[in-house]
Amino acid sequence: MSDDAKKVKSILGDFISKNALSSGLDSARIQEIWDESMGENIKAYTKSVALKQDTLIVKLNSSVLREELSYGKDKIIEMINKALGKDLIHDIRFV
Image (cartoon, rainbow, N blue to C red; front, top):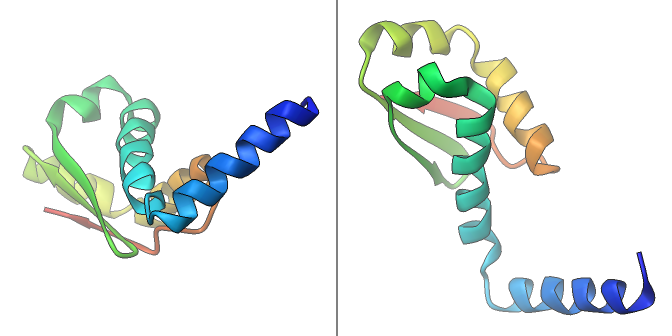
């Protein structure tokens, strides 16, 4: 990475921190990560994905899928946190 790119990255990081934009950016990234990680079948049954503090709220159209995904909560949390590059999500609620 060039020095100019490092400076721009630093300036953007400072701007995001000072203006409390990181939570909004994280929410947008989480939606993208959910869609990519879970695949087309689960994406088709997903109504919405929202971050409330440290809990991911996932609204699903299928009660069967809701039950199935609840068994893999820890793995899903780990996968999304890894893709985010930080330990942001501590719980998932499927509704």
